[in-house]
Image 1 (cartoon, helix red, strand yellow):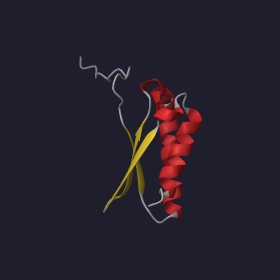
Image 2 (cartoon, helix red, strand yellow):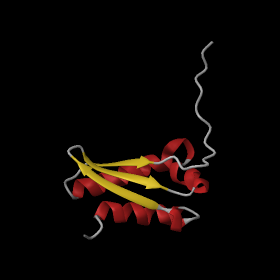
Image 3 (cartoon, rainbow, N blue to C red):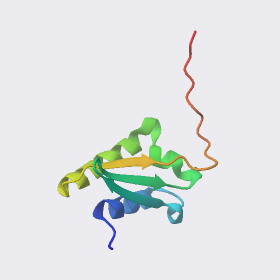
Length: 95
């Protein structure tokens, strides 16, 4: 079976912006809610994929939505948290 257009597009896009393109993996699942693309990247590339305040991730999701509309499908993106990630969990300030 050939790769889906949305999966190929996401791989191409992400591999173009990261430093370790060989570590990019995209899994595609289809269910009644639509298409779910799960993205895994090298831990050092997470900042480039997410972007400042999530701007890059939001832009990637917008582009995937457009690809989905062209193919009559709802496309969602899940960015997997890699092992060894340096992301600091958000802590709510309750005083």
